[in-house]
Image 1 (cartoon, rainbow, N blue to C red):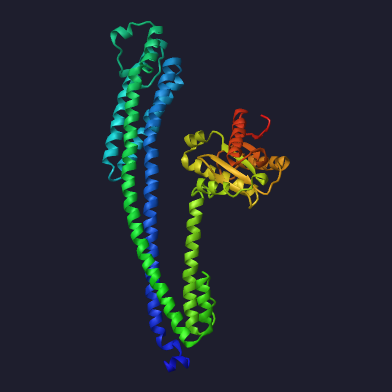
Image 2: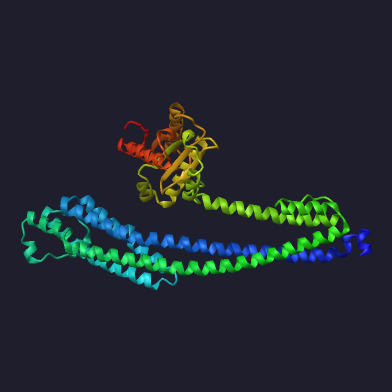
Length: 448
């Protein structure tokens, strides 16, 4: 004890301290890796659920599309609808893609059985549609049509009908109660599939969350060990009377980094602590960013949008509601990958067109909101200039993307009594732009 009071160097226990620090650091890194893996498992389970549900809904969408084309053809006799029907049935094949996607995922036997049943009903419904199409072909005297319809033989009593009666019968076959009863069977099986996917995903998420909680408890224990080691070093160096340690205690209590001063041994420990502290802060900031930002575009997501709403000053905020025109056509024509790039391009253009203080939010699939803050009144001339710039960059994309237009609604906070009213008025102004032919912007008229 006397030797400690005389200021014996910590060098004699230096090696032991290094060994302890290395072990705890490795445990912390390993625990961080396991925590990240557990978190990603939870995230992946949720994302897989969304992907599978979208895929399953694709079968219903395809069935509805086939119904629409069949009904339009039987009513109008226009061959364009016949061609679109068979493009979906034999080229696009979204129903088959939904089945294929679900078959690639393990532990989805129940969902797959329901989806296959939905497909069976859909194929059965096609037989009825084929018959109705053949009636229209005979009634209209159409000479060129898909070969699959040539094998459809009309009943003798139907073949004897007049063209007008054949058209009536064809229309009835795709519009009567029996037809929609079959459609409802498809819809029911699709709903059963979605529910089975949800149940399976909930089970996987629960298991992943349990693993995450176990890893979190382990990490807490390791952190407690690290804290205990830090206090041991504080006690040891306090006994030696080294003043930087007293300052370090104050900094730890204040949740701040330790100044790297004092003895060499203390500098080493301070540096190790600061590295861990920095990793922790960066991890928290990264998690907070991902929780409030859209992964695809980098704009604020719905959660970030709701958080912004609670802190904005209504009287100094201008809201601009953007909606991409004909975005579904872009996805259908160029593919969803191009559609994603279009959304990313739009956010880049919006961020470059507005100030860094302004907020760009993605509130829907192709719907975005920009909050212009610190704006005490509607700056119409400035907004018109920005809109011209945005329109120019979206139409003349240098990345090889298809030209894109947007419909925009603009309203100032002074025109609304609260945030809910501000959103409704911005949405109404945007829809007025849609009504006026799209590719335009509308300032909300308070008197309208």
